[in-house]
Image 1 (cartoon, one colour):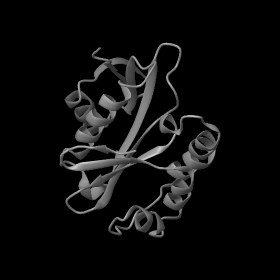
Image 2: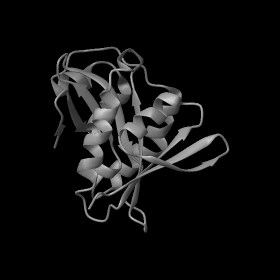
Image 3: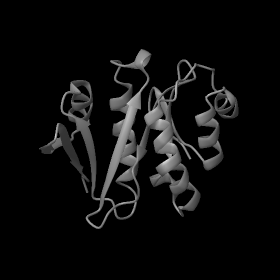
Image 4: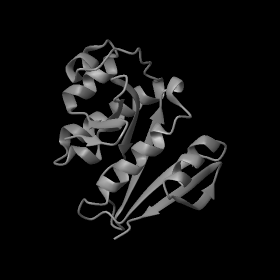
Length: 169
């Protein structure tokens, strides 16, 4: 399964591919047929993998709502960022999205393009009525990405802002 946009391919990673992603030694890029671009795995991301992502993907009947989706820039055939859903839709039909773009690829509209594509896909899935996101109140770039994708701020607390995009159906 892949999602294609004019400039990007968005690929959900399997459990084995997630393990390769964590190693950051080029084996994932080789498996996916991508050019090698050095990646740094932050401590925060490594902890999220160990505590949430890997256990959820291993035990999920629909790993697409739990895995990391890598974003590939077609022109260079390299990974430029990642996004994920933080689990299946809740009782109100909401799914939360998280995302990040590698520093050297920021400011080019790739994340806006990726979020627009992944929200279009997720709204085609059963039980999804809205996508939500949480950002640091000072992360203006992230706010702009969400606004560009049609999200509206609906809550603020403890230095965080909450955003929502309703299903257009």
